[in-house]
Image (cartoon, rainbow, N blue to C red; front, side, top):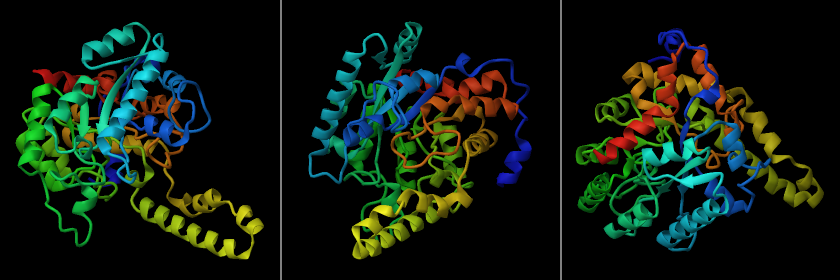
Length: 383
């Protein structure tokens, strides 16, 4: 569906009622705040200028159920399973230090109980099939630790599934899709009541997962390929298949997945900045220090740079294609280098509600998009 048609169709959902953003339950399916904490050491318990997420800004943004992602870095020379365990230990310590502010949620009833007590309901998630180390018992271990979805792949492919990056890499000779062990992984997750996440998964893996699962699945942080043709996004046929499964896709906020041509311009600007820095380094230290890399890159990508309304364009596209029951929010905050204007961090989340209201979405539809669809698909794991 062309982007122009999306704009023209905006408003077909009825008249929004007179509600404020904080009247809505908000779930964000993908926040990499734990990785931000590990890589920078910044304070994530109090409001901070750095990063996108902390406990204070979650409260300011009205986010009730943030999914804190455990992401072991395959680029480190450290066992992936051990990395994930260490990150989970850090999350548990964070929750223990803040018992009046947050709690760990493993079910819809946990989320409601914690929210009723005025607390944030943190739901842990694992972004790495590689962290399972080809051991089905590790799925049970992570479930006991509170993990409630596993991303089948990140950019790296485990031995039993192929990632979107690898499937689109010229000359990649790996196996596409799930192997027999991969199908066992999906079935065990179904048995435990753990959501299967296909963001980052290759297209062949995506369809193999749908053939295997007997529960609704999610794409925790993906956007629409028809609006921005990037291998990380879902094509219309995938979105329709996900909807037939009863699943939900949650829209990613990275401009490179929202605006056609942005990622190419951004990567080109970064390469040029690298080349300039190398040249200036050969001139003098003072010349290198005077170069503002961020400003240079921003100047190059400014013509492509979106604001928060483009996120709503992607939400609206999915709603028009398959209905409001199959779309939600998966920001990827603290896992992306740039965010749209107006969505500088999680405290600005209510702008999406206001824009949906402006587009004519009624209260029930907005409730589903902002969090209700997550509650439905999460509850369905135990039916």
